[in-house]
Image 1 (cartoon, rainbow, N blue to C red):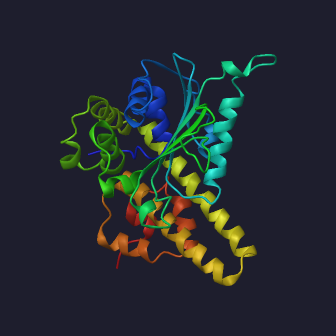
Image 2: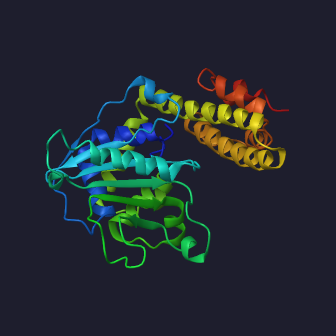
Image 3: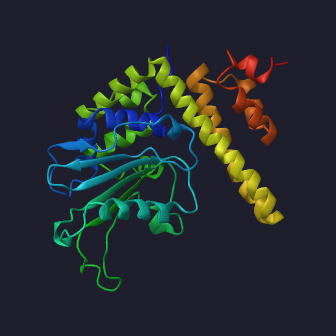
Amino acid sequence: MVALLDPKNDYVFKRLFAGEPELTLALINDLRPDLPRVTSVEILNPAIEASELSGKGIVLDVRARCIDGHQYNIEMQVQRQLDWGARSLFYLARLLSRQLGAGEEYRSVASAIGIHLLDFDLFTENRAERGQALWRFEMRDATQPDVTLGSELQLTVVELKKADRLGQLQGPASDWIRFFEHWREENVMGDVTHEPVKKAMGSIRQLSADEEAQRLAEAREWGRINWNLSIGAARREGVKQGLEQGLEQGRMEALRSALAQLLEQRFGPLPDWAADQLAAVTADQLATWTGSLLSAGNLEELFGRPD
């Protein structure tokens, strides 16, 4: 049986939503029911360039425009980065500013709306933050939040893991959370009734049966792991020892998790002996395994035969 590709892999995510605009349409309407219902969308960046799969820091987002001219930036993030907020606002503001040509009036600007799906907890400072998974940011006054400076710039953030734990989202939004967090669990996905999510599951199955899509998804994940390894090496050169140890521990845990997902996609569930080796992996071993992943024919070839 072919292992299903992870819809949170941003290559897979873009193939899915840029390739099927009706899924993008449903995702917008389901995660932003407060907005006027969108009836059609045009995907503005449907292509995926080969350089994007290994490019450092490149995000394979989906940009769409609805019939009213409003533009949407939809993206998946699986790893927390220190500059995530600044980068997100920069790209959203650029989506807004690029709408106007020379001499055009500002009143013709349509809204730039971000929908960013995060597979990590972003806001964790206090109980109130830990108890909320869906966030919407706009330009509002700090003392009188009912006073807004227009709605041209909006950012919706969904913390997927937190949303799954809390179970706060209902209806179609809840089904999308199940899809992104439990796509491999037939007993969970069997309870989904929302047709767009059922269609997305069918598309994932079809995409997973495509050997080229499997290869490119693995290449994208491999590029992300290697980038993290290079970032970690740079940090080891310039960060003080105490801080470095904390960063290294978190980085290694994220890389082990990413490699485990890749291995399961390629070879199926990991046997205990392979899971044990992965749990004890060093940075050098991780780099070696990552570099050999695409050419290895089985786990024994990659890890060495178990004792």
